[in-house]
Image (cartoon, rainbow over all chains, first blue to last red; front, side, top):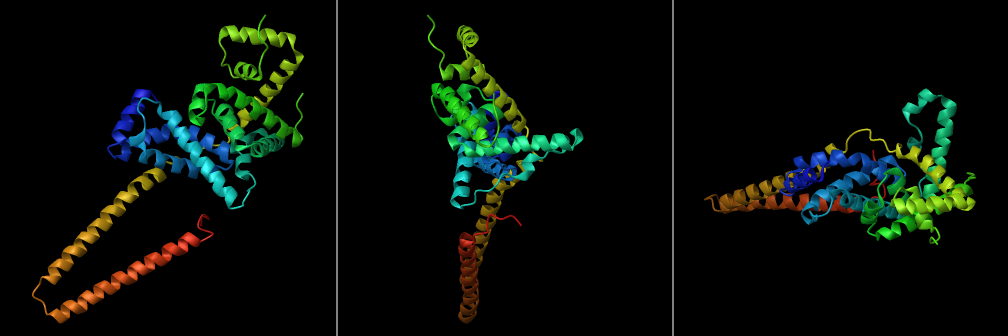
Length: 188
Length: 140
């Protein structure tokens, strides 16, 4: 969606009419769900985080700096929501295992059971690897690898200097490699 | 002599975030360093694996309906409660200023106040139970 269109929709939303919020929700729910799933590792929790983030965004639209782009601001709120949910989950003491639903996609069924099993096992390893590295490392990998943000966008979402993004990504990738090797994955 | 390639340079090269000049500098260093080439190959391999995860978070349906409900429901509640309070206040004022028997006024007033006390205490009780409910996040 074009920045001018987004800005116009935001202006109309600030009058309190949620109808103009629908195009923004529909434009950002796909990427948002991907990021939230990457951070939380559970699609149902990710949907909850996404809904909560959209409600917070709508309620705080009047505080949105219209000179900034909407996307990074939205992802910043979503990221904070995911962090809050991870904290709440940890404080409940429920370190839940990864959702099995993430490991299976109906489209895979056409490619044969062995292929499904291999892909499922590979994904499971990756989720476990992502789960094993710290929150800071996981979020930078999710933003870069799962959503494909550029460095300036990542810097804005994480509220860190642009120069720090490369360094954080390096340490995050190293940490993920070490975590995957601990799980038995071998790299050349 | 070119400055050595840092880990950050390697990340920027991998993520296509370098200027042409810097990209050529990294490519030159890659030609001369097996270790750098190995690191790059590992990171590229991890990236391919992660690409597969990017499709995991499929949306079964839009979250818009739920978001819209959450945004409009408070307005509905505010209107309902304000309407109730206004009507109840107006009714009480009309009743209090009517020429009805004072005993009738007292009896009906007691009924109304009693009902409101019971309603409020039930609401507060339910609210406190909900706050302490360890299963409140569990979906039915």
